[in-house]
Length: 596
Image (cartoon, rainbow, N blue to C red; front, side):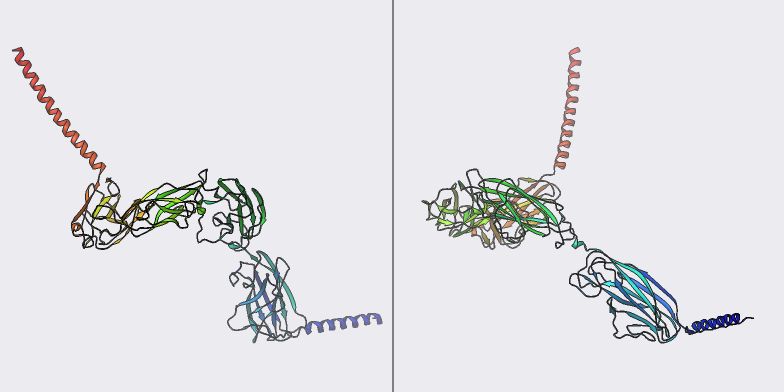
């Protein structure tokens, strides 16, 4: 054997010995059987919890009490995931400890053993921090963690992606074994954050003034405004654009506004700017609330304001431009008053083209006989949106009748417009003498509503003024010959009666009357016949009126009447047949005698 060969063999033995030394340097015990599973999460603003988090679960066998596993994560820079510092408007991602998968062995915190040591023990960590898993004894360990978006800060909808780092620190080994796992969180926008406006929730409200005011109603009506050309708005519309869930902060839409009379301007401010024109567009408006201001251009008559939106449909508002007052109309609301009469006359004004002046109506009441009604140049009240006019109060002086005229000024000399004259009767010092019961129809179908009308009369048989009259009826009030079901109005059993004029038919007061009346509405029986209403005058009436009071409502059963008619016809036909037979027999007898 040569010297060279000997050296080679010595070298191989040395290398083998060194190799064995390297293998022997690995500890006989280490982290083993590490299994990591991940699952992506789906969340939404205000819904960050263990059910929506992206999860990381691990299990392993700790073969040495000095072994430690760490879990940490970083954001991948997608969307708005700030995972280090909480920046305003961004979601702060957090790594959260969820649970341990072993009964007692797993120790989860932020401190390690062996080759890893750290301080601070928290139940959630940001991207620059970690969680540790270790065990005080040899055996299996396990834990699960979640990545959540901080619900206290605003989230942007989209996918947030992260990388999870799992490091295995083995006692006696300087460098850990590192594995990475991708996870993601899909953040869905709340329905209230949708940018799409909805016609079901968006509104347009018209207000009859240049600056829009919340007048306590979500329903607008036709507005009458001056038609004279002006750079000052005379009406305004508030447009509230909302998405299907009622949210407005993120709504984006476009408007096209047009009007066939007058001019308009559009903006996000309730403070009007100069009129822009008859048609204009506002594209990609991010403000959910917008205002349309309307201006006169010298035109008069009805106008239609059309507001078209991209997603919320089309809103249409009606506006009436009027000119100078050319006529006035007086309508009686209450034909009888006492010493005071509230809302006795309804007044309206119109221009030469019959365009109503609406809220600009300004009228004054004049009496033809101030010894009966003292008003002469007395201002009427403010405009009533329901009645579409102004109501005028009157002052009674003595019993009698006076004609009332409405004018557009507080003196006859200054007025240019006068209304028709209407008669109003004053009843002062008269005594409630009697009461009567009438009905709103002459006959009724079975089960139909009936309204019994009660009037309080004076000694002359004239209707007493509106008011509450006590003890009109004796105890028990009004009784009926058939049982009725109450529908609306006053109770038949009441002994006191409240009367008033009524300008508009309604469920509780279906009868329109300028004379003060009380109304009792009931359902009649479902069979035909007469229903008699009976009462006795009470101590609130004069002695002469404390007698029986009756009224009869006729219920006509058309089916029963038809059957009765058919039966009667059949009887008549039978009688005719008998008569015909008798006559025939008589004729035959006569013929026999003639032949004989």
